[in-house]
Length: 166
Image (cartoon, rainbow, N blue to C red; front, top):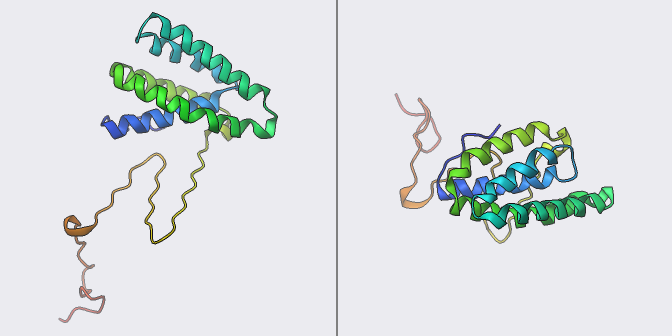
C-alpha cells in the first residue's frame, strides 16, 4: 500500500498519476462501484455542476471499457488514464483538502481490484547516451556533478579499488 507519498507538488503529481492508473484499472470491474460516488463527491467540492459531470464522464469511460473487446480493454484503459491524471491533478491543485480522501480511496480500490488489475507495467527506453531512471511506489535519488556525494570505499579498500596499505 502506497499511503506515505510526499505532499510536495511532485508528490501530488505522483498521486494524480497513481489515481488515474488505479481509477482506469477499476473501470468495468467490481471495484468501480467503490470509486464512482467517492470520486464524484470529491469533484463536487469544486462546484455544484462538477459532481454530476464527473459521474457522467466516469459512466462514459466505463462504457468505453465495457464495450471494447476483452483483448482491447487494457488499451482503452491506457487511453483513459492520462485524461484522469489531468483531472485529478487539477482537483488536487484547486482543492488540496481532498488529498487524504483520495489516498484512502486508492487504498480501498487497490484492495477491491482483481489481482491482475493491481500490477503496474513500466516501459523505459533510453538511447543516444541518455540516462533513464524509473521507480514504482518509491523514490529515485540521483546525485551527479559538483553536488554529488562521494561514497567512501569500504573499510580496507583504497580509493582506486586496490588494497589500502597498512
